[in-house]
Amino acid sequence: MAVGKHIIIDMWNYDQSKDLKAVMRKAAEKAKMKIIGGDVQQFQPHGESLVMLIAESHISIHTWPEHSYAAVDVFSCGSPDSAYIAAIEIIRELNPEHYKVQIVDRG
Amino acid sequence: MAVGKHIIIDMWNYDQSKDLKAVMRKAAEKAKMKIIGGDVQQFQPHGESLVMLIAESHISIHTWPEHSYAAVDVFSCGSPDSAYIAAIEIIRELNPEHYKVQIVDRG
Image (cartoon, rainbow over all chains, first blue to last red; front, side, top):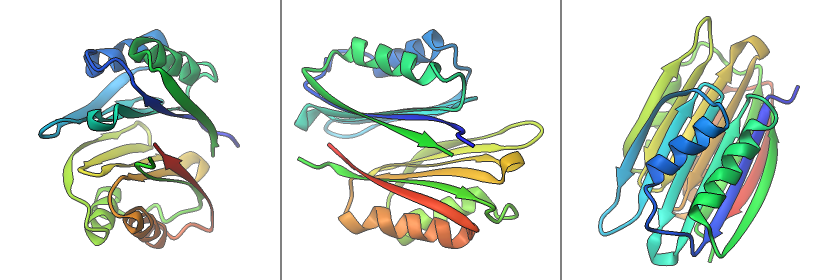
């Protein structure tokens, strides 16, 4: 039984001007995921951790601006396409110069 | 530059009687991770999604009791051992009959 797709994205030199919470929300909405909760924490002097619980599992973004690096996870047990739609939207919005994608079947 | 270890665990026939929030917290404490936030959502009629933001990234647990299945993620950019310590503690506490571990280097 495969429960869902987990898309793991490591990205470098992404657009640091973007509002990450808005990017996440837009990606979830585009993928027709149901947002049910989440949390956001800012680090000093920089860096941010965001997680959004969706009915289908979660989306997370952790940033290390000092390395121009962000770690993005989209884990969805919804429709097979929904994880891809959300992941592509986040990549499109953050527009990294370089990124690596790993796809893990969960369950 | 490797930022962290991401340990992906799929488990079946785990101990459903456990308090998952307490299990997560204990694992984080054992691994000397700093808990900075999180969220928990219950589904009807069953199932639970928990995410804990730690200074080092996150731990998440999603359960599908109807499939006796839980998806656990431990992503830590802390000391190389911390992700393993937390993951092992969660496996020990939830005591699954069968589990699969995948380790992803992030960054």
